[in-house]
Length: 249
Image (tube, rainbow, N blue to C red):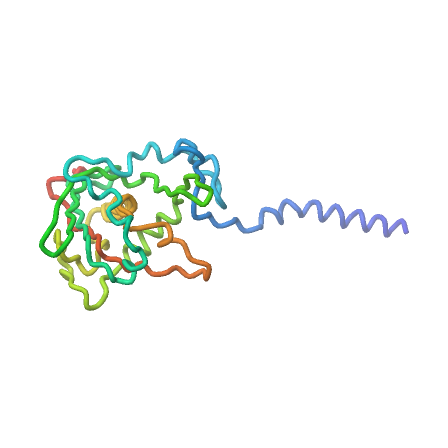
């Protein structure tokens, strides 16, 4: 009995010693889709849903949208429409061609000119600033602000934007980028020789897509089936870069 007691004690000691190691070996939880912001963006980083807090906030990244000149229609342009119909290719207008007037891989906020087409022959333009890392927020089911996290933002600027193609049978300008009324075959997949410019361009375009309502949270979050519905709306595209606007010189 004495030996049995010593054996039980040894097993208990081994189990306790192994516990920290087992805890360390547990896989980390995958980051959640949104970051809870509480009542304002100043609370960013204090709490996240399913992810560790991010230190610092996006309030220092500049505004999502700051008008400079023009009609100011880009803000909420697509928000009142049937978003599902847009994804099915049933909506042709409005369309938006984005030209970057001031840009650079190291420039956090770019000056953007948006040509907004309401038909094949009618368009207006406006100029505004959009920042690459501005907070992308929505109201959650609790009525609180939630911010798109880094994983979802990366999915938008890589999987979604790089892989987006105009549907067969729809008019395009092929590989040529113009201000419209038709988009290029690959709306956001710009090719540049300068490191970081294409990535930053898609980040800025994401800010424009978000503020206009062209891209929404449901476009990046899998439904109950766990399958992400492919994003198919090609009515917004990058038209080009103003050669005089390069701020990386």
